[in-house]
View 1 (tube, rainbow, N blue to C red):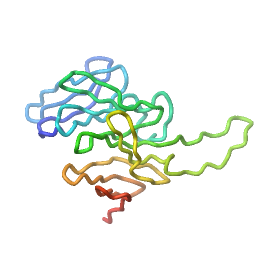
View 2: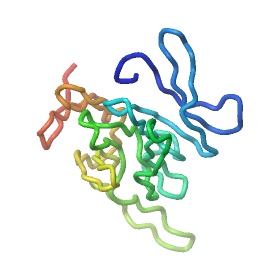
View 3: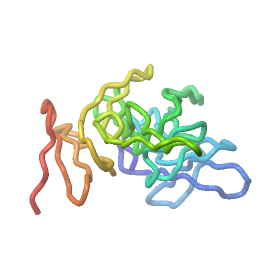
Length: 194
């Protein structure tokens, strides 16, 4: 939803072979093209002031959060006033579920700090691989220049579907088989008992 509650953003391929970001007016159903690209675009989210939109370009689906390579999801921002877009982060790691924090100065994303080792090549002996908080997909904060700061430190599985409370700035998300809450100012998330 847009901050004013009038529009919904989505990504799709419609009347061209290109991928595109659209917004639709919830009252009139009128659809507008935001921007288009030959590369896959996903998860468009408005900034709190409605002047920008963050989305991912390229990328493997959410169920491949540890993917590393040239097709990894990059974080891009579209500026509605300037009618320009720019890449914020485009390293070789996935950046999933990216969205603005309520202050509009940082972007929350799910990514890794280090690659997960691959299997040994033919004729080589495989080493035991153990996970750590850098290899597991966790919550990270990105500034608008691409700097990253890790927020959660899970050592297994992936954080999924984060959602930020606009007033309290608390972050709820899925991890393993439960729902967790990272309260603003807290260093450690806690599971929510349902």
